[in-house]
Image (cartoon, rainbow, N blue to C red; front, side):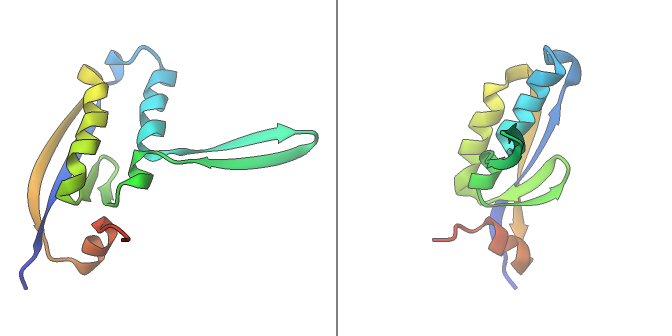
Length: 109
């Protein structure tokens, strides 16, 4: 079985370089999205806010490790680079044989 090349991306947030917990949460919300609950007129409304990884097909391997198609790597790297020295990251080219991972990283087109 011959696999497909993909990128394995790892990242690490450097806590003491963020100005606040709020700023660090902003990084994670931008990356993974979040659920917002709003109470209004005695009712509760829930909203899903998408993050970058909701828009980019990927397979999350661990807390700070995921695999994505090589064509999406520049978009994700751009996001990390916007955070400068607050986030370190590394990209490794890997060959994927696992069909489930391959399905997760392919576009639904």
